[in-house]
Image 1 (cartoon, rainbow, N blue to C red):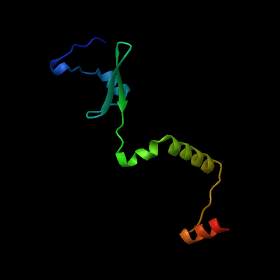
Image 2: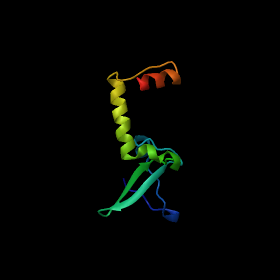
Image 3: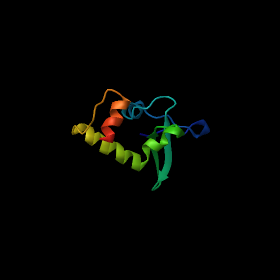
Length: 89
């Protein structure tokens, strides 16, 4: 799709691309040049205090926990005291 570079070097994205990528006004995109092409990649900004959740070790543990839950390896208790009794035994 041919687009004209406007004032302040801006371009408008075609509605089809916005729709297909589920973009909204004020969303973020990463812009980079790769092999003489401009690459636009939608981004989600994560608050700094939640970034730990997306680290590889945390994600690995999340996958293990999800597998344990899916396979029924869970312990249900009625409260914290009961949980600690089960952990101690």
